Image 1 (cartoon, helix red, strand yellow):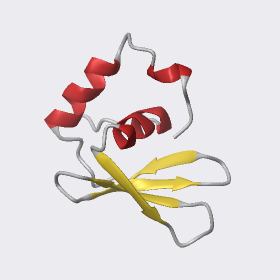
Image 2: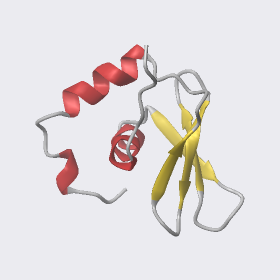
Image 3: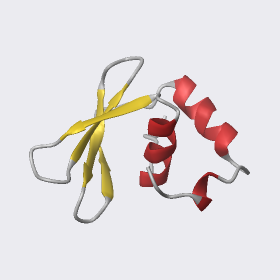
Image 4: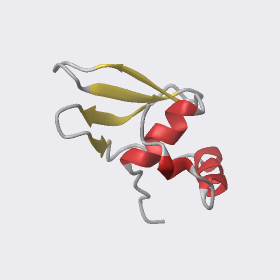
Length: 82
């Protein structure tokens, strides 16, 4: 099975749904992203570029994939704020 990759918008949606949480990173403006259910490290967001870098060892669980599929067709992309 090929590795699935999350976008910054996916991460924002999942944080809003409390499926992921953020912690302060080592650099100002950076955030570490964790899965709320498994408590695994997902990746990090670089504050300066607002880019998300997914950890290559993180396998997206089925409940996250299902949640992301429910977002399709909804207005989640219209509000890009946290």
